[in-house]
Amino acid sequence: MPETSARHRPTALVVGGSLAGLFAAAALAESADVTVVERDRLPEGVGQRRGVPQARHAHLVWSGGVQAFDQLLPGLVGEVVARGGRLVRIMRDMVSRAPNEVWFRRFTSTHHRNLVCSRELLDAVVRDRVLADDRITLRQGTTALGPTGDATRVTGVRVRSGERESVLSADLVVDASGRGSRAARWLTQLGLPAVAEREIDAGVAYATRLFRAPGSTAGTNFPLVNVQANPAKAPGTGGIILPIEGDRWIVTLAGTRGGEPSGDPGAFVDFALGLGDPVIGELLADAEPLGDVATTRSTANLRHYYEKMRRWPDGFLVLGDAVAGYNPVYGHGITVAAQSALAVRDVLRSTGVRAPGTARCLQRVAARPVAAAWDLAVGQDALYPGAAGTPPTAVERLLARYVDRAVATGARHPRALGALLDVMSLEKPATRLFSPDMLVPMLLGPRKAYLQGPPLTEAERKAAVR
Image 1 (tube, rainbow, N blue to C red):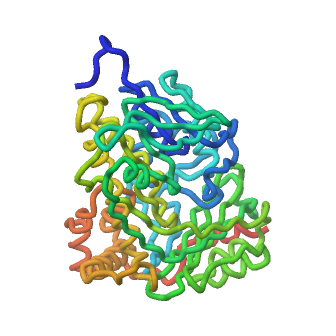
Image 2: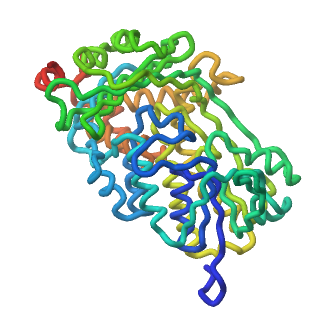
Image 3: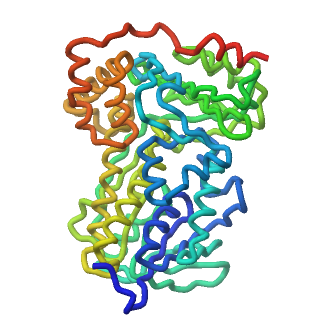
């Protein structure tokens, strides 16, 4: 049972002040007094921060994450929308070509709403909301050096602030420090065996540029436009237009080994025109660029199987990208971070922070959304040449073919699309793809023919012209 008010409240220490760390702090605040340790200085209001180099690229939050946001921090989504974010109806407000080169129809019957805004805005709203809680303290400019304790229990973290080193004690230490996490090394230093890992690296590079919304698209609900890469045609290239607050478009282009976009501003639109469909490049013809091109190559899928370790210390938990980082093209990292934090909060409503075995239980429940997103990401990326040390297994190839067929069915049938989106949005497990909503139209045939091109209306095309 949770600790009662008769005892002083437990303490928790969260390493990392990005979204995963802030969600973790919000989840823990019901049960403990929380200190967030962040090595950077966080911006005041909406602004870029050093520790999130991927923040300039396109981000969206799937409907599974939208639901988790409002369960963890009621009203959060409304706050983002009030400050310029947008809830996009999928697929009504989205023009999307799947990896198998099938265009989705813009059905209006699904309930899915994705949250779209700049990463800077989302970070600012979450940060303001979480740090307003007087049970949560932020220590900026403080670097976590390593845990204290032993292989049976972690008791705190050694930190450095300026030239001064000290120890912060806590009943629960949470590593939410992202892809650069040293949790695996910390555990071996405590005497635990190495954690199992798996990496799938499709070699994707990203190039992103901001544009002023062209023509008369400013202030409208112009659709997201997404051309996904096809793993069967290496190199795979794709891109997305994401209309965001401030009458701007974030445009992110991507390519695998041998087909990477460059940071050359003069080559940006030409690369977009050379995608499997030129629609993104065509829409940018009259768009005014805002700033330079940002690039990144840190896109590998990397997972640590902490939940499967035979021994696990009390008082220690790993969350967010520190557990698994995904190719950003799938847009699942933020949703997984929120869902994992929500799972942690729900366990702690009936189990004490200090209770033996609590940390192992938390690590296992937090891994469930991780596993769902991982299977979706590697199911595609493992098919690219050189993506993994070993080729995809027969089972992985079989599942990939089934997903391709499910996508093709969903592109033409609204019920099948709903089932597909339930899984892609991380609202429901992959078994939903084997439900009657998917199997009946898959076996008996969809109602509508495949689209021959992007389902943009003529009015939408004209709106993007000066």
